[in-house]
Image (cartoon, rainbow, N blue to C red; front, top):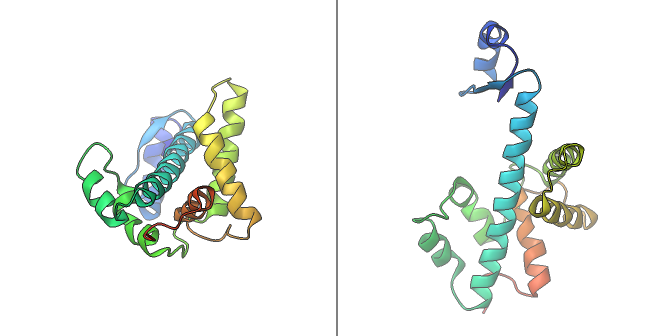
Length: 161
């Protein structure tokens, strides 16, 4: 996610190749930061929604792995379910992308949303979940630790009957 003139992006191409396998020019200078903020909003909301869905299904008696299998083939399928499946099912919150870092990114997105009057209520709720994790000392854990908050709210640990 790169912002700048086309000439600038082309000139920096060899540097971008070292930093990542895919470079997407998204517009003028600053547009890359905007695209990253949008990405982080989506990722956070998906993590939060996935945590809540697994708690709901589990509390209603359905195996969380079966839920992931069932919804993973439809419109709800997403990369997070594939990559972080084990984190959720095993309650393994070893960091991939840390809560602290995502919290920082959402602060940027929420600040920008305030500047242009673009309400982000879902993002704000997930940010509160991240704050709860940080307050409990879980800021160094993976985003999948949002499951802790969803479980606490429902008084239910997924997989328990």
